[in-house]
Length: 282
Image 1 (spheres, rainbow, N blue to C red):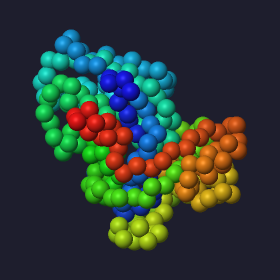
Image 2 (image 1 turned 180 degrees about the vertical axis):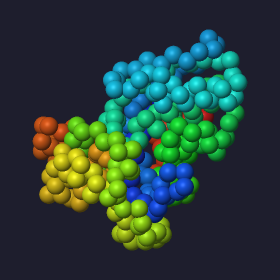
Image 3 (image 1 turned 30 degrees about the vertical axis):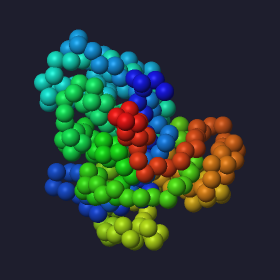
Image 4 (image 1 turned 90 degrees about the vertical axis):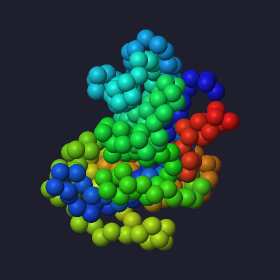
């Protein structure tokens, strides 16, 4: 693998309970983040030019608002380094699909530049920075599938079964803000424990709202339900199902309607980013 190339894995929310709304407008959540082997790929090269140059290969995001550029700029300001970087993103994770692509890209940027620039921040310090960019960023920085509470930043690593997932993107981006602002969204789920979850408890409080407002997503869920239990990840729009083997998931993927996109990936407990960091350190 190119030594300048770094993975930014996708995630699934295996369930998502909304426990209430905080005075600051954010929602109190419970969820489990399942990291995937599938993801984006960032090429990051440090230099001494004291500037950040981001090369995009995707549309729909203002370069000045891109989380990769914001992450690099934030780390540079925090550490007062005079170093710079050239960053390019090979975008594979669908935008607006609930797979955490932007957050993962930002996390990879922070973690890798912290190493390349020798700025010496701990993962906890990087997570605090990442939280300024988005609630999902810390889990990618910490690099382990996790039980999450708070707004998603209170993390406890969990060991999840070695499952394969088929993920469907019905070519219909969903706005998280739109979903969370709907009055019919339930915000009073009863808290559960990790033991409850491992015993089969848990659902996604956003499913009904998303299915009602985005019929394409509902159609994808109905189709996948013909093969296995379909679930919505996060606020959508991606739908996923769990399978016992890559072959089973790939067989279903081969029959996916042409109007939708999809991929098969194995879940992983340690992030591919942190696996590469460990190998390169060794």
